[in-house]
Image (cartoon, rainbow, N blue to C red):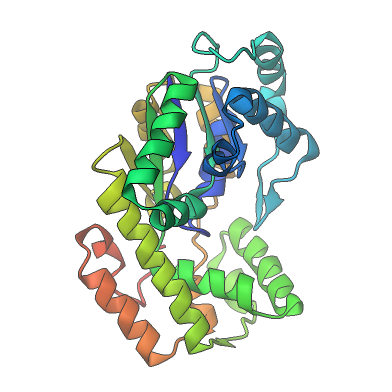
Length: 303
């Protein structure tokens, strides 16, 4: 009934949302297949079959285990998913599938590509997706504190391997520890950020945000999901997401998925020393964006 794409930002929790949705018995989400890139290479006739294959591979190989989350298939849902997949016809005209929502998670690159090719070409390519699958195209935009997005990307992309590994390990503990005292006992080394590299990440965030707000949202049904809402009330956030996708909310799926969501946020912004110019630049941008109003206070606990 719908083809789902993610738009937005790296390190925003899009992977978590996609993985939880993929556990739903009527949803099929591939992990970073990059639909737009493959359609440009003329592979539209095998689109749904490839998404199905990649989703199954991700689940079977348990590739999606990192950052304190285990995104592999929940055992209690494995049987139902296998039965549905076995019964799924992979013909090109696949509107009669028992899968009600299919899609791909490639948030940051989707915005980057749209920005690079321009409005006319982007519309043509997104129209091709709708023509290929024969159902409406919809988007999810996962929003996280921009300071945490920038800091997490900086740590993951511009620090030595040993620093990244230490950060990942500490992040894993933070995701599973609910005792604040336990987390405070962990020593977090502050990383001195390079102003030029950090500014490039900030500029890319701005591009991605403007692509979603100015190009995607006016043209396509888009569900904006704030990361801190998911952390605070995972059941409510997932219910609203299912309403948007027009799918049911199985009680067992909702209960198990809610348990997979960490109750505490990872405030990566405090892990780097921010150059004044970059902190001020991102602060001004947030203050000028009403939809980012909840993130205006750098030292708040809002993720």
